[in-house]
Image 1 (cartoon, one colour):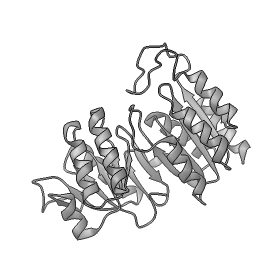
Image 2 (tube, rainbow, N blue to C red; image 1 turned 135 degrees about the vertical axis):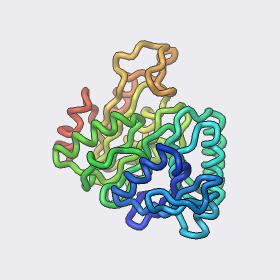
Image 3 (cartoon, helix red, strand yellow; image 1 turned 90 degrees about the horizontal axis):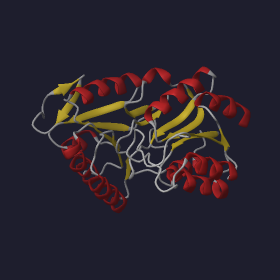
Image 4 (tube, rainbow, N blue to C red; image 1 turned 30 degrees about the horizontal axis):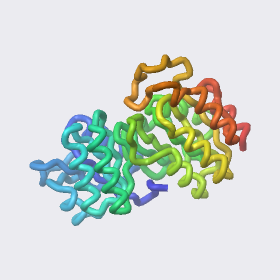
Length: 286
């Protein structure tokens, strides 16, 4: 799924503080980071990784499958479009505060090109033993067969740590981001996990706002053969108040935690009442 041994990664914005720090962490995770891109910094290097002025220059020299965008919000969309235009199939947009219309433009262009956007405003993807494209902490992961998909970065870290402590390693973890518009949905991630021979069970971490969890529930009901354990954050969130993520908003009674939990349970998923019960439910589902 997405990241495999041999997946070649480009880091856009590698000469900035975040790009440099997380490029080092991705290398330490075992990721094949083949190049960085910062306009005007071509010919230099960061952590031993060569830097190019353009994505096309990096792709021409090294080839690449995945790009990670550590570029400020005003330029993040252009960076993602440049990566797609250069032929990169998956673009991970870590950047926060990307304007909604910019995100919509990038996502639409990716669909036209047959590519995939993860994010924006996301921690990326990690496949223990194979590679990482994003900012998830290295030390929490363990190789295994539990797939994780989440709208929340910090909850992902808590849940993955809990799974690892319980001896439940992970196949792939995808942080899809908490913005109102994201490139990869729960349904798309579930479809990939269902088709992945290395995944035996899936953890879905949702939150209030929007209808993504209800759409996921319908997919679980009709298409998933593998067990799904879910957790929905925001059970006590007051209506009309945004909670952390831009997309975490209960509006006119829609998108509540209770409606999402009911939909998931009705579809056959087991829903944990706290993040710490997820590992027990996963262990009992296999």
